[in-house]
Length: 89
Image (cartoon, rainbow, N blue to C red; front, side, top):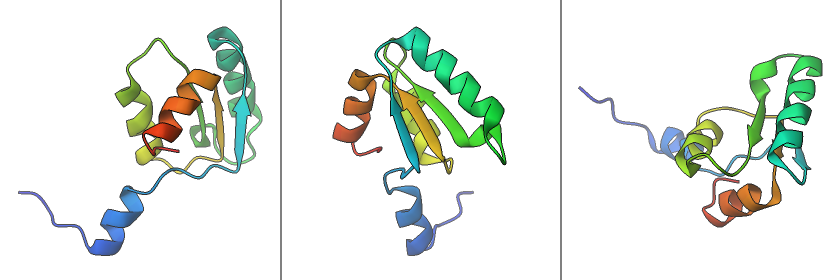
């Protein structure tokens, strides 16, 4: 049985992610490296850092952005542009 969401919960889940930092790097390999370092040195939790890049389904990254509070997003220009266009960022 599905639980109905209150209107505040619904809108909170469907708003674009607003990270404190957006790091844009030119390649997928560099995005992975920078994301890994950011995760290692994040002061509270490595789960608050996301790495996004092309070559994987957009749904994988969109679901990550929708259901996590993120402080840092590291990504390639193309994927970041897609996420902004689809209003996930």
